[in-house]
Image (cartoon, rainbow, N blue to C red; front, side, top):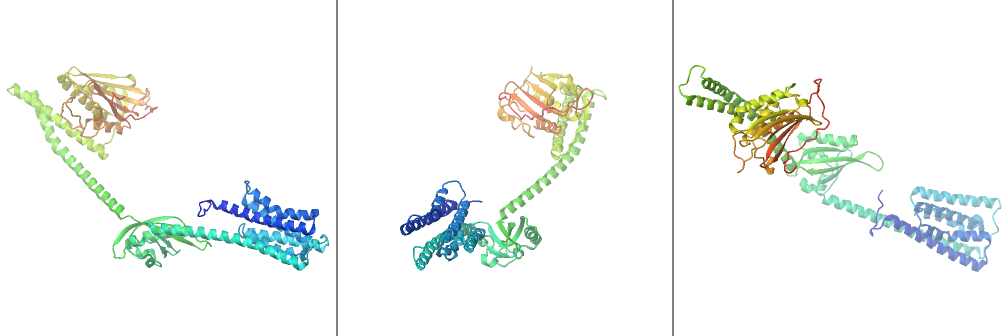
Length: 576
């Protein structure tokens, strides 16, 4: 529990410790005066009287003990016990129950009130009662020493009462100081809480167990355009929109009957009849006597947030509708374009091979070949767009199987053989024995190889080389397609692999294509649980590595789990 602090900023415990020291020193000073007066009147004290004098001066020793680590509660209890024993002993020396000092027993519970709460007072009263009972018993048995009263009884009674009055005054002054400090701390705390409630932007309300408002902060003017006093006695449902009534009731039911914090987003009515979206957070606060629980609610204006949410929902709906429109468009394009393209490709191939007789001129054969190649190129572009669309829509399904990767690699090389020969680029394959068989989608792997080989052939100058390499390591099957082409600038590496992105510049000639090749490679690799990475040095060449961590196959035909499948992002070979 945090120690309360006074207005000086020092801990309350230090103040109470100083107060205890002051009271004990005053008691010790009064005891010294009494001892001096006794010696002056009676003379040298006997041992029993010396014990009483030691008791009178004992508060000074207790004051010194406050400099140690002994708890203040312990010192206060010790002071009360010593005080009760001292009063009983001095009364025994001055006449027993008829002693003028018996009145001091009444001061023991009064002093205990400074030390703590009701239990401390009852313990002090018990100590005084025990001391008085012991004094009465000893007197009844005739065991008390002979009383030595140097002054007339009425004088001693007057002096004893005077000392009791002084002691009571000290106790009363200390009690008043403590009460004043407690009242001041309570006032400061109430003022602080009132300041926070008055200046909070959110509306703070207190509700009875039936939900009716008992207090509303001034934020009601800002949120609801109502005076806080006008809200008192109202049920929260009176301010709520009818459609949100059940939501608010459920929140207050959760807080009131189940004792749990609850939240509700509802529309509240302003004074002018307009509505404001609000978030209400309510939690139960048990009462002091345990008879039910009040509810504290914090209400915040969330109109802007709700408007933003509506905008996001509308934007999502528009995006979904646009995506559906795109899918419909691509489906129609697939049917409308592929059908005539198949006819163009088929008939141009018939004309190119002169299956029904010579065309009459070699130029016609050349034109037929150009039509055939252009048709195939256009069909590849359409297929690429459609495949990318299926992948983005999550409708591209893999058909994984164990197949000969070497055969697929050779087939891909044959597919690019004619373009490579025309560009003067050599094609090579190097497949390790451990990577000859893989478990993957055969068509997807072939598409990956064809796309990478096609890019390599496009951007490799005459006399260069494009090579396919495959091997097995601790991270699975790695397929690397490298070329000795112009390379890729480092600034362009991060955007490559995104749909419809291509590298352009004075050192890279613009090539035909949609820019989907690398994005398809990256997407197909990801569908296999792997990744595609690019390493490139501008002016030297480019290597694209496709990692397939779950494609490795052992000698017995079972898949081999990778030891490490750490993903490497796109990077520049120059920076590596």
